[in-house]
Amino acid sequence: MAARAFSRSVDAMRHVILEPGAAPYAEGSCLAAFGNTRVLCAASVEDRPPPWLRGKGRGWVTAEYGMLPRATHTRTDREAVRGKQSGRTQEIQRLIGRALRAIIDLGALGERQIRIDCDVLQADGGTRTASVTGACVALHLACRHLVATGAIGADPMRGLVAAVSCGIVAGRPVLDLDYAEDSTADADANFVLTDQGMLVEVQGTAEGAPFSKAQFNRLLALAAAGTEGLVAAQRRALGLDAPKRKR
Image (cartoon, rainbow, N blue to C red; front, side, top):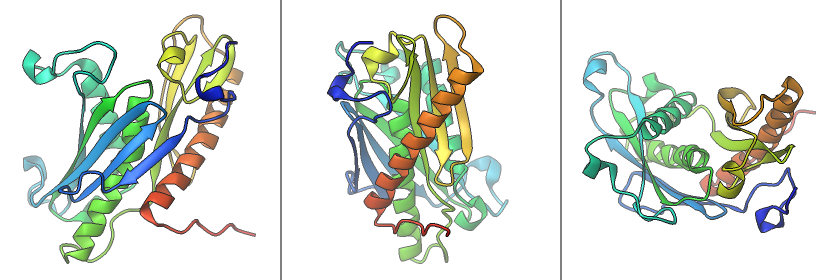
């Protein structure tokens, strides 16, 4: 197997930066960088739920995802110019929304909606996983804002959620694929896990030959270790204390 970018071992993440408050006008925001991938996540609070939830006594969290025209090596048209979103875009923003709703009490949120905009500034693989990880920080900050302004009485967040990609490259399971690895992988998968190590979603595909259960279990183990590190980075960004270990 060729050397990985950033001189990484197969079980190493790229350098991760989670910068809270990167979009100061939003109620919550975070710039998430996984190596050369950079995603700006901004959470906006709307004091009304979607129409289908009005009068139900609970709120909603949803996400929108997009890539800037020069996020990649060649320019791509904005989807607004094309007149419709691609299937990939719709899939990714639904994934982000599901991940965030797994860690929030929608009843405690009240009849309001929080929209998370995830805009890819630069893409080098793992844009959806960086989006989930950064969006979680933005959502936490937006909920803090609601508590601080007295809009809600208690923080509705029940934990953290992070995501990471894994794949089989040149026959070896590796963690956190960049674009060069993702484009040549024999198999790739995206894992979304909570800070308690619980699975929220798994997306896995054999790009070449089918892969074994043993290989999948290795990918899962890599993802569990990777998201543990991402959760630690989220805690630092949010100023949260690390949980006490049980003796």
